[in-house]
Length: 230
Image 1 (cartoon, helix red, strand yellow):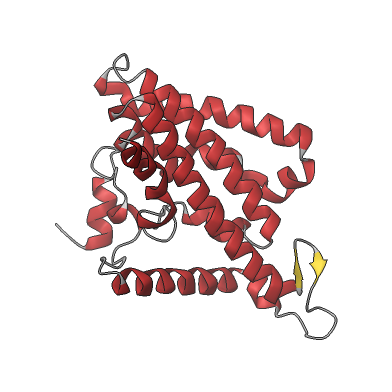
Image 2 (tube, rainbow, N blue to C red):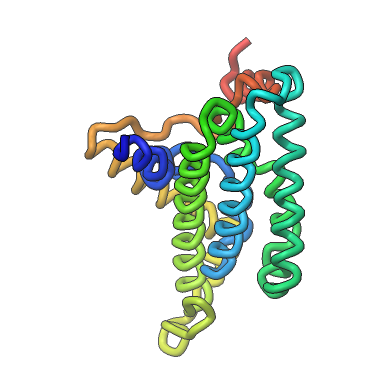
């Protein structure tokens, strides 16, 4: 039983890492990771929303009508996002400024909606909390790593402390969108290489086609457009 609960937590760290394995939440991943501290701020904010929304949805799973479950999930998630946004604004204004519009957009983060639909709505509270915590920490770890790489090469610093700026000219492109795509692609490639080495399937599909909740959130047409299926 203990191993089962450990599995709920560790699943999102490596095996089904939401960013590198499921390729979800790529918009904030690419947009806010110009500095390591931004990655931590976004990741922890999303983690708090994940844990709280998973718990609430799990507790209400037998009460929410199936026909309105998605709107209900979004309403619950939006409530927790509002709380997190107010806390960040009050206590971490610099992080709030750096994250900008991407903080309130956690409401439509497909990682959170996917876990609500695929896990929390079908499981008891404790497994749902562990699932949200594992997914959130996995998301935070990747964002922080991406932010650290881009900040180090793009600004010559790490967590705003100068590291290489005094003797190596920073490569500004790492702070621009092309640098974000490049670093993200390298991390996904590394994740695929590790997966293949361990006998697991590499990531082959991205976007709505790769989302575990694609069949239940009204995105069938998006999937057809991406795959070319008629």
